[in-house]
Length: 480
Image 1 (spheres, rainbow, N blue to C red):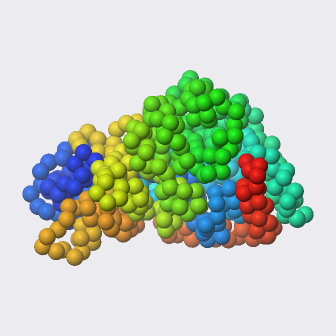
Image 2: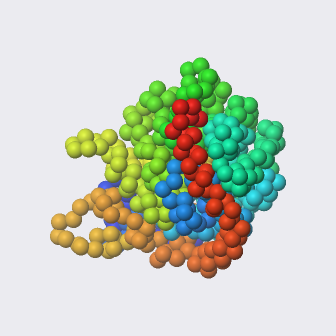
Image 3: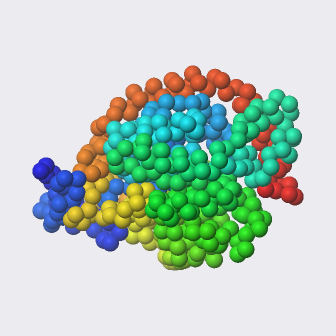
């Protein structure tokens, strides 16, 4: 049995946020064997590894090809500028950035299919990349069967485009979706392809993109198999308007509860426009909400009501959605931004320090991995640890010093990470990954993207026309 001892200045966890008592952590067989008082103030601060509870493992930064600042509804079409990419390269580049940013557990909601038939192979490549990088992942298979362009028929938007643009966009949204039974079977095929340590989830992309038949089938399949479900909900105000126009007694969220989709097996990404009564339903169901603060800001979606979620009793987790504030997958900065926006104003305390640490390290683990353990520094817990360099975090070294947790929430970023440990294995240290040559792999990926993107010229020319047509559509009298 291999045992590793890690002397630390202190250890942070939601139960004891701000502790600076020296400890020695002993790791054995992928778990924390003991947490004992330390004798020396080593400059390392330990905390549970961060969890990114909603992501899509996107290969490159969206701003690099002009998607920055676009509303979600247009941003999604802009993503089509990316050409087909080797799935292993794409996943390894993204998951490598996640590890370097402090996230050792990542939810991959796989939305970029090369083809329906290729999804099991893409899933296997993603799982292999995760094993090579060393992160734990969940894998949700995106399911959808309606509204490929806007929330309703596409014809009015397509007819507003000039000829060449109309032909280009129409060709991309005209392919029929596979039938519902085929989509449900696909998740079984993906689960078999993922291999040991990764479980598939149903990934309906959102109620506005999934027929009632598909959502009912997912709810039934999840109930029968126990498999988790990962879905977007009420991300933008246009989705809110669409939801309010649906003929659902009691509203959309009540209907999701009635069909059995709201359950402890469900993760809901965003809920930016969820109302208090809907949050109460979500809380009662035991579902998890993954809040994606930077993503919502980057693509003009809004600010999630995190304090209201907490008051309702919702289990809330941290998500990056591939759009961290600086597009660098820095989960520490994402945690800090969520805290700054939602902790409260003046002397009010809406979302405390321990709350944000639980949101970032513990609450998302069941959503991604389907298990409650982890996210704590205690004997018997998984050895999934983030070690911070306190000499860098507290480089001023004044005689009166704040608690380490206060410094972390004031200035912590990926640049203060000394080491990332997952399952007792050191996967990143000193800004470099142990399992892959991330820089070389990223160069190979970018060369592939540059070569393939040459074929996206017609779409690039059509997108300004689509933006104008979408603006008219969503601001018109009969939106959505």
